[in-house]
Amino acid sequence: MKITAVIPAAGSGERFGGKKQLKRMGNRPLLFHTLQAFVRLVLINEIVVVVQKEDVRQIERELKSIISSKQIKVVAGGTTRQISVHNGLTVAHESSELICVHDAVRPFVTEALIEKAVNACSEHDGVIVAQPSTDTIKKVMDDQILETLPREIIWRAQTPQVFSKSALREALELAEAENIQGTDEASLLERIGYQVGYVEGSSLNMKITTEEDWIFAETIYNSLKND
Ligand code: CTP
Ligand code: MG
Image 1 (cartoon, helix red, strand yellow):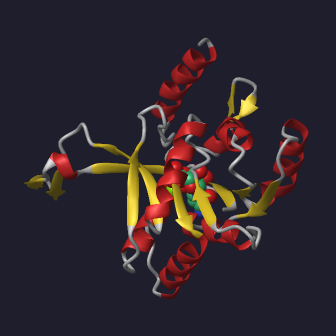
Image 2 (cartoon, rainbow, N blue to C red):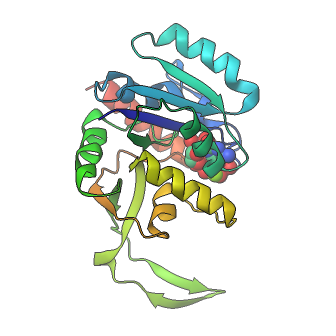
């Protein structure tokens, strides 16, 4: 089964204060580190990186000069992550049956984690990587706690998220038509009745959202590098 990885990297990093996906970690843009596992993993047939329109040519050039073993398409994203993922999906090769979406800002994804999600896909319309919550989650309103959610059933969604291409396309098209914004792709499939499974991820597969996250990420980067 052919698989296209779609890497949304077209955000503006408002909470971070800049395009974190292009900030250098070591001497490479963060995006480059994220791509490594997808480049190495043989079961990924094609990689589509979605960046802001103004960055397409430069990133294309830079990726070509450092990665030669796998074809990488670079396309322009949109104003929301959903549109960016949709733009990536549009250029996926027609023979691709699965789409593996992964945030450009989760640089420590491993080949094993991608493979685990892909393998679980045979039993579902899609599979996401998630982690059981170690925090107790509260539902709040204004300055008050409304409810404490039972921790045993709370999982925190990460990426990779792998979907049947046709199901993901349908979910994105319907969300657009109904003006619905999901915070991840899985939620768009769930809402229209598709079965999405999950596999357990790792806290090393963190997402860099804020400047504080960058400090954690650099620590992880340095300790993995020295392994
Ligand atoms: N993303 C994208 N297109 C957008 C918005 C986000 O491709 N219009 C990508 C980001 O580049 C990132 C991933 O989606 O790799 C996760 O998004 P997030 O962490 O929210 O990044 P930003 O949207 O850039 O940050 P912020 O929400 O703070 O502005
Ligand atoms: Mg965002």
